[in-house]
Length: 556
Image 1 (cartoon, rainbow, N blue to C red):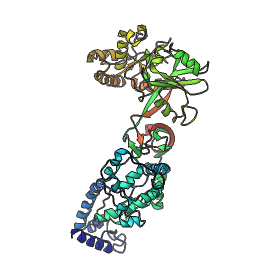
Image 2: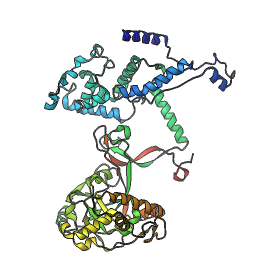
Image 3: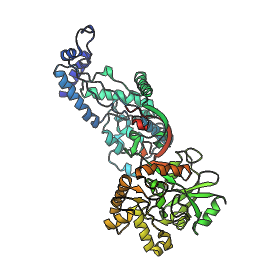
Image 4: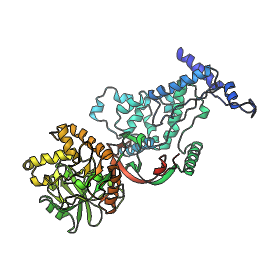
């Protein structure tokens, strides 16, 4: 009874167009006949809308929650006699729809156009009523007649993605889309036509006061909206707010394009971490690594261990280089006779930053375990120890953080200091020569709080006795902040300069001498909606430039 009453009045509202609100015309109010303030007082108005819901599926309860706020406010404004239009658009731009469509393309290749070759797993077959939920006959008669906008989801969008959602076609089934219609969604433009219309139906059934004359979709499927976006961007470019150049961005190799927040299934909010990668030339391989390298590389090959650092100003204090004993590293070709020793994670990122010869490709000639290279002698650029430093083990090295290779500066890094002290105490246990871990620690930075050997002072102050002590991270952060904001260089070419000024000068010096280069990576695990683990790529791209005049903007 109540629903029948609701539908009768919704029909009357639509027939009488009571939600279609118009601004006063010049016939109603002749031009210049009244001041703007008086016009607003005489014909008050209210405008409300929401960010367009994204059309990679049906509207769900979250949309209803958000829309209800504008709906109530609009209704209240209308009751007060205000002109209160409520337009609602639908967002179709971005990778989310394209990724879902691509998944269907691959699933159709595997299972057939109606997924007839798909065989459920035994675990899925045991789920009560699972098959019944997805029979095409469950769809409303209109859908079976061919109108794919006339479906009704039995589940919320979140539920649909969590139940029997191993494949994209299963998500579509859970939303009530007939099996024989799903193959149409392999075309991303089909989503643009189907789900906005379904959204309009659902919103109207909900009884919202939407003026559908003002509805639209994004993308070039809507030439009017597309022309507005083009005008907006051209205008911003004229104002100097849009620039073009190479910038680091999150990137999906599988999709061949950037992967921004809403294009991700994991890692939303994770950004790019930029480093300086240092080239530490191998002077002498360890006994274990030497025959392996000789058999895989040219006789005249030059190999560099490549640690990534956030603190180029500390390179004067390098005393060793750390690797993870159990990590499998690679030796990757950079040029005819030049090779990098680093993790496969780092190599994959570098392949999309113009570091290797061919974009997107990284050629590995040799696998080496960290334990194989312990004792290797490498040159440490700018280090006071000009005859070279040794490669030593470190338990906390991560394969997916930086390059998996870590340069050690025990004067200013508490975890480096704690590690070399432990290595020297337990040299036999670690299988190293004690003197490898006992190179002189050179003071390179003076700080008001910790003197000229920040790391030893902090380790002593915090009583760090274990490499697994969580206080080491606290000490590391304290050392970095004290050094950057209050430290002064007391060693090297920039002696006497504050750290914040010397930092970039040292970086430039190393890069100019071809002893270092820029490197960047995701600051965490990022997965695209097409289930591709993302990298950081250095791409030509347009970008909005809202920075200060000092950084290249006009300062507005």
